[in-house]
Image (cartoon, rainbow, N blue to C red; front, top):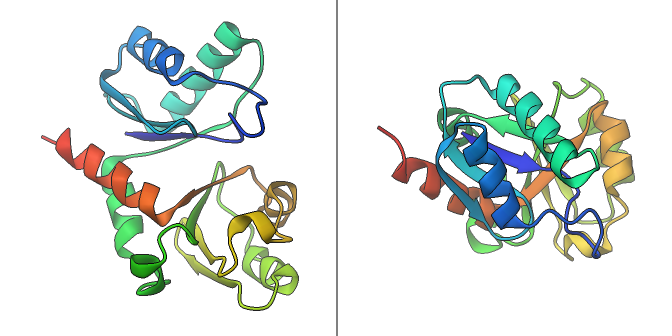
Length: 179
């Protein structure tokens, strides 16, 4: 499984230490638990479903740290399939820090891509594939008008994003634990 925590460790707010996250996951009975960078990326093995993992991790984080964090979980197979669907290639291969995979807690609204494209700045490219949105920020995600709150509203569900370098790193980590 690959779990993404939304909106943590940004600007010194909603701090979730990765050691605490690994300990919480281990306490939940997950095995081969690893984190990747400090932005809330967790790879682990379990027999639970992705939704069961989301619920368990959200409850454990809230109990331990005192605040709610949305968690989005995909199986390693789902993650790998999303990586293969990349509609931004070859941009993502050469500009991995500027190309993003966006995942939602619930399926995104059918109007999401249109709404995001209407607000996107010149050069920002928004694409959709089953179960995911993809955005290329040629000037960087820090300069966009596509704020997290706007993306959540446009998608109709909590959104969390990872750049393409992180997508590939998480895919490799999950593959290492396959079998």
